[in-house]
Amino acid sequence: MILVSLVAVMLGAVIQGSIGFGFALVAVPTFTLLLPDVVPAGLLLIAVPMTVAMAAREHSSIDVHCLFYSTLGRIAGTLAGVALLAIVQADSLAVLVGVMIVIGVTLSLFAAPTEVLWGTGLVAGFASGVMSTTAAIGGAPMALAYQARPGTELRSTLSASFVLGTLMSLAALALSGRVDGDHVIFALEMIPAMLAGLLVSRYLKRWLDGRWLRPAVLCFAGMAGVLAIAQGVR
Image (cartoon, rainbow, N blue to C red; front, side, top):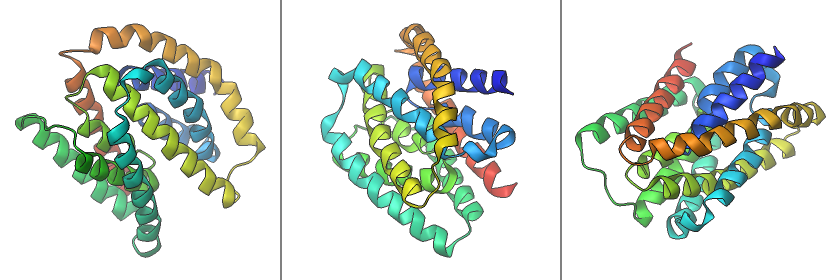
């Protein structure tokens, strides 16, 4: 069990460290099956140092302007997600958001990428907040917005956005009594695997940057949409 957990965390960190998101794509389904009690608090506790390290690694490339608006959108999206969960079943919301992501990926395959403007960041942040709240997979909307940007800008800006979003989610969970010592111990045990994954990603991202980054982003964003749909219809 512990070996599978370490491998899942390391693989998730390799993917996230390479393309800017994807940790949850590996971690959420794996730990939902193996250790459901650590989802989401334990995974969020791992995500904080991981995203901080990634943002610091390429900090000079952070799009501060868009980060501001995406953070506003993330706050609004998180609140909207919580409100929607009070009136709509979580499964239905997960399916809806997943379908929207799949449509977004499909459109991106046939349309030229657009420039990331303040409105793009606001909408992407909002969608990320809703998706994170309803399906625990919030990276895809932001990744789609930044799919055509240089790898350093994509990874650093997404990471900075995820730091803020993850801290907000953890604060909400802590206030509701859903974070305890077991979650902290689990996260500490997984830190070495996470760091190993980030180390591997330093070499993989050099290969992906350029012609392979956008296809990788679209591939994993599509997987995120499909996973959200699968969570909703299970």
